[in-house]
Image (tube, rainbow, N blue to C red; front, top):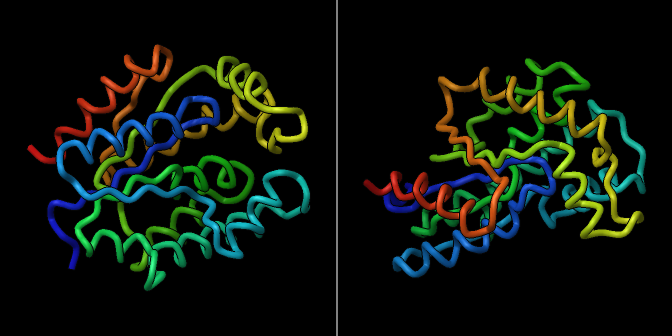
Length: 211
């Protein structure tokens, strides 16, 4: 049984919105409050996750349907792993902070497959934990791409990190969140600001979970 003080928080958004930075800040903020915290990201470090990273980098070619199914498999394992799974950490009283979850699959792979199939796959699986809060960091695709290119070499750019793909995925995220608004607790966070300004918006949303 999950500890009621332990919360599951997902941070979503395009690459370049500062998810990694803000998760680190949020973890430190919650630890200062005396809360146990576990941070993680998807794809995972399991064999399925490693294969997904090779696909995303363009090293391995994959059909979008196969990629979506592989994300699902990686996610089920991520939830159920007896030693380091999401359910295990929540049961131990740790608040889980996760960089990307099934919303990214709905937006990225769902745009090029059947979105209903992708959603049904996840919502129909009892082993996949629903988050208590989803923080969606928003920023224009153009600014995201500028940040990505400023921080990485050309060899580190992933297959979705181009103007056309980012614009499509940004629109797709909006569609996804409109479709799941009755199922999920989603808060849009304006990520266009200083790290301090963005974190102030994040912490205000997160604080409501324990009130």
